[in-house]
Image 1 (cartoon, rainbow, N blue to C red):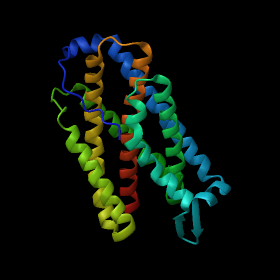
Image 2 (cartoon, one colour):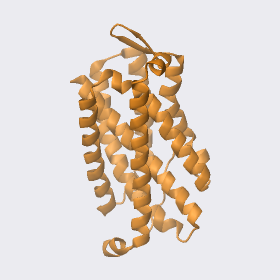
Image 3 (tube, rainbow, N blue to C red):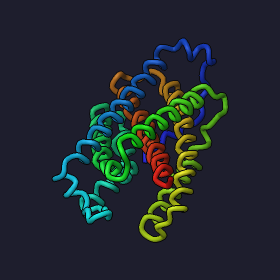
Image 4 (cartoon, helix red, strand yellow):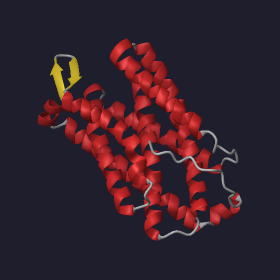
Length: 247
């Protein structure tokens, strides 16, 4: 999991930040990469879900029963494995390596999310996506504008994410409780919303902490930021979608 936790740095005033074109372009590059990644993920998920040959490779469908095949399980858990391995590739500040890893991650996530089209209508998926986008926008603005120092929150929130992953796996394979799934999803909405705010502030801190670096290194940092926000957007989306499944 790519941890963006950095020491809190002294930053210019809000007025100076608003006029800082370098910060604006840095964040704009991050949000553009994240948005394009979401488009690629959604397109791949839809394409896989609408290709019977690929669905047969990923899932065993027997009436109302849908179970992943071995390949389906590999793609289901691949994004989690890639998240934990991301630091190995992203922290080198090599734009080519960071970019390649990011787009591989986005593509794998697209395949792993194909299953949502088997459980939900396109209308429900679209509604949840727009709810997620609106929530993301609000909490990201909060993270950008707040004067609260959130730099110490990272360790606690990432530990909570690991605990939530363990609880989700236990529920999926052992307890299989709809009530527990709803509780985990509700916690996920709050946790990933907080992480988005935290990471947005961390991105500003990162920009001012690194100072003058080369264009290639700065491009690598935009991929690091895009991946962090992308992962939490997807997790927030899935958490909200699971609440709709409960309904």
